[in-house]
Image (tube, rainbow, N blue to C red; front, side, top):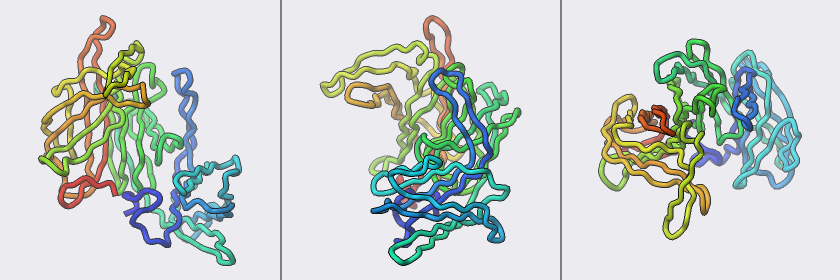
Length: 357
């Protein structure tokens, strides 16, 4: 199943040298009000992954729609000095090509890649598979929230997405794969609102994901099972409050004999401030611990480790976790209601153990 495979394609046959995805989305943009964030351009793009060549490689890519209709054709040079019209990045002996494109009238059915190995022309065909990602975006008072829904396939450096309509409804047709994250908000990000995130989003079928946008990000949400102990699930997350961020206070803490400066933007949470659902079923919280997520040898930020019961887990396959925070606090003498939510997908094996592949 392609959605559970990361490049460089562990578990695939050796003749699979490349993968390719065509993101067929309309042209749009996001211009943030917060100084320094600038503008994010949305639109269609072609992404190709492969083994880094030992010398410059001429790669011909042809995209076909239904009936073998050629909808796109271009030759790319895979090298350190790439054409500025597209980007090539190298990491761990692999490359990724990203080329902005025009949106096609029809969704591609296959991507054909050809390149030379000596005197031999190698051809590889990727059959395209797409699924719907759709749902509704509201605020925490259930009012429709017109927002952008942006997915990042690998990290944060490429953006594919769309705006919801006035009723908050959105729908995207995306290639089957695992996405690093999905971010939801509007241009008031960092001024009045914070992004709502879906982490490690596994799109292996049509999915409805409803989002609520508030003033607290649930960042770096991650879940894994207690493989060697009781039947519980560990959840790590870093909540970031807009109200606390705007104050910009810091504190010091010593960890293992080293001094760290903490950005104090995480609200102090209790168990009853948090709700967790697994595949739509509420899970019982066993314990909550506050710890520190460090970013360097001297910087960090408070985060939380949550332990919940297995309730709601499926016997195997993709699991959907949703975590919601609702916390009342006083910030600078004013009452603040910290509200935020986030999604995280993960896999389980037949015996209930964590597995991402």
